[in-house]
Length: 69
Image (tube, rainbow, N blue to C red):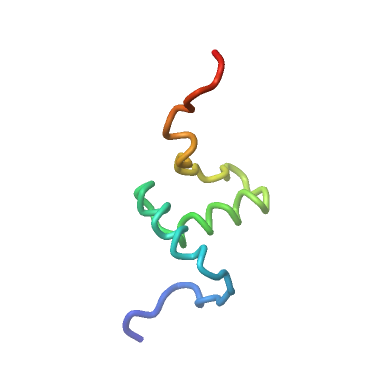
């Protein structure tokens, strides 16, 4: 069978955050599916699994102004 993936597709409902997740994954140089598989492996405590890295948030990327130092 041509173009048959090794694993069957799974369906979940996520909402509009799916598009933000796609942009964030691409900003990290990866794909949503890869991140989800990494998270699942970490959650299930698979040997060697690590929690995927996250991109900086907008508040982390810019220094705060007007605060005391």
